[in-house]
Length: 228
Image (cartoon, rainbow, N blue to C red; front, side, top):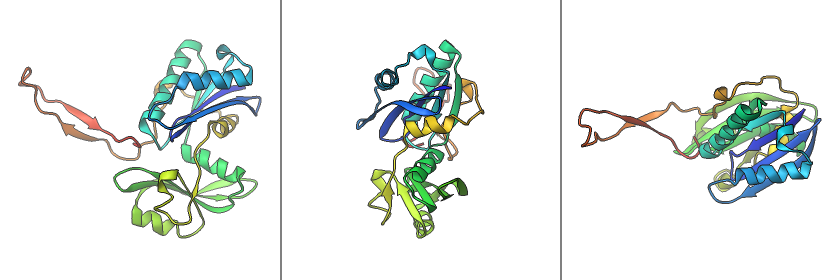
């Protein structure tokens, strides 16, 4: 299967092309708050020597992470499916990180932490061996104190902005090449409207002031942060 993988949930935005179970193309960029998405896609496709209309499946990293980045990746996948009728699959970013940890030989108990803002952290824990990895604690939101206590054992993998807050932690960012390899064995394809970012908080609403032009109207707008 010819797979295009898009991972925009972190400060390293990457695109990978997997052909018949092997990574054949990859592109990434870091810095800034927006991705030149189609520039990255073209670079990866050129490296893989494949055209856009040959892609059969798009795999998207669903986070948690940068809400804007994840939404951008999902929008691209949705548009591609409308135009080309490709298969779509969404994959948790923490599962992607667990697979990368295995590839980098982080064995035993491995904790994954992602900044959720508001002094909270996305946390998941895995038992990783050379042959497999399994979930010990599923993804959840924790306070700083709770996260610190759980990270007292095992290896803790974090994104760069958390290294100073969790002593002994190591940096690991999600990568589209790994995402694409995970997609090879997936069969849970969905329609574009079913792709949603991982978001563990209940949406909060702030009532806007009534407009002077529409004195009888009451509106509410959801508030979100960059990391969902």
